[in-house]
Image (tube, rainbow, N blue to C red; front, side, top):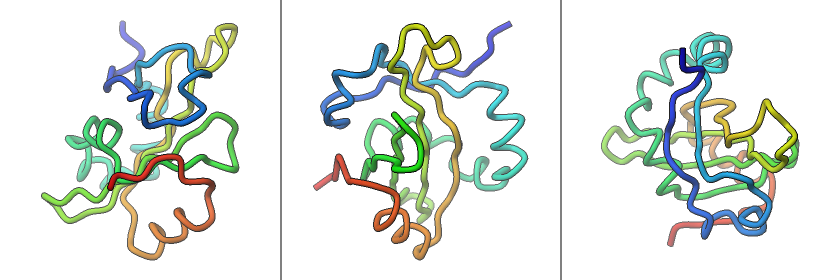
Length: 132
């Protein structure tokens, strides 16, 4: 049985210095993470933005380095069709020996209100990509 859902490929042109660090371009969502975190803590939000996950990663408004977690990026996007702001956190696969992270893996998916959106931009880390 498959342990994950394939989402898309990371656009290496948008991830700054990480383009040389990642060992694979695939982004996945593990069933373990979906069932044990996202559906437990962000269930309603997940169902609201589920169909936009690929677009958020492929066409983000912003990508921010996560100062709190090594080799982790925060993808932010305003989803205009539903007028919601979304945040997806992706742990990058940078080490071939690390079996847990042999693919870039979504850690969490959530909707953000305006204040949280601004706090994420201000406090979480350096902006490495901004959609003009």
